[in-house]
Length: 434
Image (cartoon, rainbow, N blue to C red; front, side):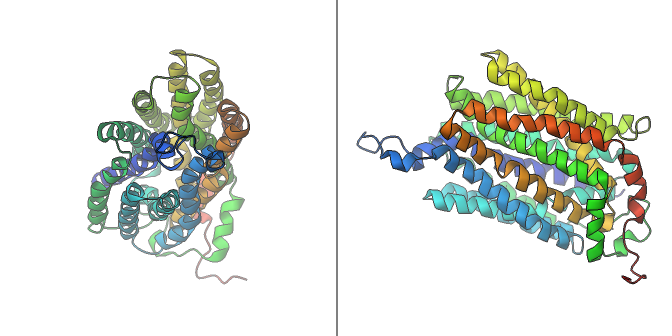
């Protein structure tokens, strides 16, 4: 469709900076700890132990604050995205989160740093529900899995760049704050660009009659919880997000402290390279395989996602029990398995919901997967580490990988039917509620 490729590239670049911003924080956690929770004061004397109580949990709360704000605000913007220009919402969101990221670098206290991460969450909440629905309106079902995989390929690449850039910038400047300052200018530019983009008609890539002229009614939203593919997909994504969020936040820290790696900067670089290569290949391959198998196996998107998760679970456990250099190999394999589902699972969300309420459906999934997923897991690992060990905390959250894989395999039996029925699952505006 006209302009589809340019819109996809722009959204992909925006998503790239989205995840760079998210993971920059994880790459500089030890530096933030040294500044706000030092072990010694300026004279070299030991800091009052009470000021360092539950320090891991406090640091984990930075990611939790972002996620809580993001998931709570997302449904509000999802409702607007079904009714107003999605490109304008995205533009406003990008500018807001970019300014807030710059504010994270300026923050003079830990509390203000916490508040800036909340505003980053507000900005990303405007973007998250709208972006994949624009792509879904530009590309038909037959190639949607592959195209969404390209869009979501920005997750591993952006996450890895966040780790690498954050570590390198902090090391080069001697100040972790510059890692946040550098994301501000490109974010403002991308946000301004969005105001010149044209919103595609809703449902133009689907076989839906006058989808762009329909408005979902309150009763229509209950259709989502009566759609098994949507429910099982969301629950599986929740389990995966719980595990992946905790692992992504704490693994570099764990490798430095528990595996006795050389230094955080080197770990960030190696970890970033692994995430880029494994995540990029797995995300693209997952979307392609899901599309290729769709004609032969109608539940293919669920199947490839579920089997990849089942393979990923033992890989994570092997990371925790092996030494150098083997744990790097198993981190690579674990990342590959966990990113393999990204394209297929988001394609499921798009295919089993009517385009008139697709943004709200994505927003509801965002709320659920973060409320029950990675909004809590970094802090939970931090609390467990405070009482026991970081390794035990990572094992606890990793069990959810296995659970998520089983949920997705269960969903395969419903996908063909729910995709076929999606066009009929919206109230006819000409019919009354009775």
